[in-house]
Image 1 (spheres, rainbow, N blue to C red):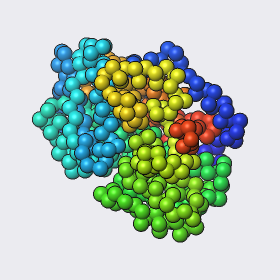
Image 2: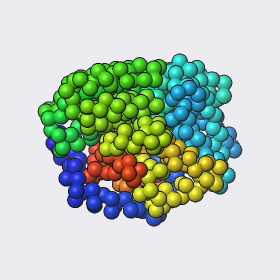
Image 3: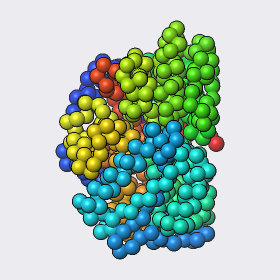
Image 4: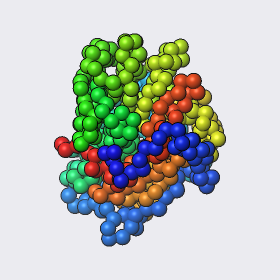
Length: 461
């Protein structure tokens, strides 16, 4: 297989799946869903000579403690709170906002300071994001930016705030898997969160080599930096294999219906379709594939599309479950709507505490909310582990995390970073298949562990 000795080989589904499902019965009981996770750190937390450090002398203007007082720390974000993409992504904001409220009320904040969150709406428009970030940094005087959604959205201000010679404002755990977030040497003030699309594509092609080594793939991708990331990553992943891309169609993210592109792909002779789009159009694409009838490809959707809210739209609230039955993706965060995780301590604590914070059952069971909650835990852990609350130290700490366990991550998945040598926080994934009868994303074999190896799958610029 293409990944070969760099990872655990995908096992035959039968025996390995049984083992994986047994392992998923629980996580370490010492990890609590209400905590920010446990970890050891290096770098900003005292890791020694090899630790990642940042030279602030290159900053055009550096204010290391802007937004920090004796009682609070101000964090800003820009997220789609209106428009079609808000249907999915606004829930992320609800997740971490509820978690920060819990941290403030029950833990006294981080390092004795409450987290003051300012969330601005950008409707998934990169120009709006840039304007929001300018306001957050220049007017609201935030300490750091956090979990901003969208590749193009983060690129819109990266040179101004995250480059070595910029204003040097931390942009922590952005909500996109672009391979561009691996450029820590040039952009040390930005770090990603979700697995890179390069990692995701490599894992999927590894699966194809094990199950259909001469697969003919039809690719549907967004006509923006998000979609291009998938396109380039998939092209890189198939190098040296017999897997081929036989057709490609791009989709404008400002549109909402990719049905014409899906119809075109259906005549390509492909036996596999890779859907590299996100939000509600991803649900529409799945409906379009199912609606053709005569085309029955193996179907893979972006990890950003696996939330129950997207699946509900695709199936018309469950009326047409066959639309999503058997769809493949990759997983790293436990799905709160999946009953197999109900007994896991981290999930049980999440549901209990989130309810106490006023989230509805529907909000709690939304995978996007759970992701936001997990990212809130990641930020809390990073801030608490920083020796001091200044921008340089916090950013160095984020780039020197070692085996950080977050309660909502799937079994065996941890957060590890090592500066320029390993700038990607999460590099382990399960291939998962959706079973509409049980409502579960069922793991198809063992964990694919690419810790420290994502760089070799990143396509050249």
